[in-house]
Amino acid sequence: MRLFVGDDWAEDHHDVEVMDTSGRRLAKARLPEGVAGMARLHAIVGELAGDDADDVEVLVGIETDRGPWVAALVAAGYTVLAVNPLQAARFRDRLGVSGAKSDAGDAHVLADMARTHAHELRPVAGDTPQAEAVKVVARTHKTLIWERTRHTQRLRHALRDYFPAALEAFEDLDAADARELLAKAPTPAQAARLTIGQISTALKRARRKNVADKAAAIQTALRTEHLGQPEVVTAAYAASVQALIAVLDVLNAQVKTLQGQVEAHFGQHPAAEIVLSQPGLGQVLGARVLAEFGDDPTRYASAKARKNYAGTSPITRASGKKKVALARFVHNDRLIDALLTQAFSALQCSPGARAYYDRQRARGCGHNAALRQLANRLVGILHGCLKTGTLYDEATAWSHHAESLAA
Image (cartoon, one colour):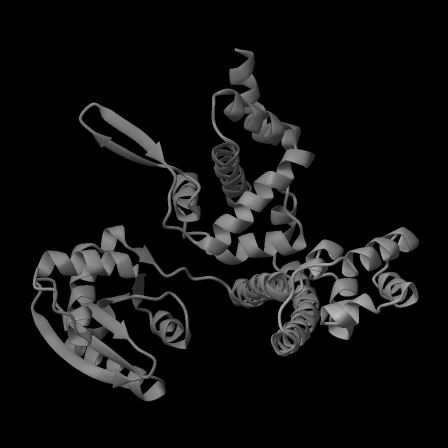
């Protein structure tokens, strides 16, 4: 016996519907988030299963793959199918063209998807707690880096609007010396009064080289005439810049702290040695790759399945005589970012990766396309290493391509 549950989740409640194999609705309810809601769901399933509870398979369609609720569903022995919201929206259009939408209706759609398309949906991976811990800290670490970049860009835009000389003086606005001097002298008039000694002190604290030359260049740039804003507007911008710098100071400190946590959790994972053996992967980048792929050994049936999840493999559009291969635009942004960074780094440390990239360029591929193909190849190599439990070997990894090139 099989039961199919559609779970449309919200922050404080879940709309659920239970179907049988014929598509007949057996039950529907709105459950509260938390222990009470989960208990009610178990009670509904238990009542429908009756005396055959041990022989019942429960498949749950839900538009998320994480959180305590999903963990509790997996722990209960249910097969949890993570449905992409785009998939659910397209499936909803198949059931009706009116455009009507409701939480209960979405639960019905998810239940029907679990009933008819379970073989094509991705079950939630049974990752180990160690992998989940790596994912938590690695994602937060990357999020803080993205936030730091956003705040740096906001700082750049503010300076361009009232203090363009600062952009000439400081190449890296996130650098410690730039933040210190801008916090001390956020207006053009204050910056113009900075002495060589004050600038040199900030540069030394930031461990810069050629302090004397750089201090003189910064002072000259800060004293250059430029178009400005009225005094009251400049004061407002100065207050904004000081606030942005304060936020950047905190972000830099927390990024450094979390990097230590990422390295600590990743170092304790059994697969860390294999991941670190891959070209272009270090502690932080390796942790991100492991976190986003997960460590469930049954999640990816083949290297192709892992590549498809990574978003590095192309998609083919064919119609009549026209056939084109395109990059995947729907993907895990964090994973593809890590894999492309790995591919770029591998160009410097792996002769095989470099040769593979050069061959793609020789075929007429642009840099981004060639890098994506290299990343796709590296995902396949990683899959093989994880599947067999072996470390990366340069000769073995690229032997097939070397043989085909020689032939």
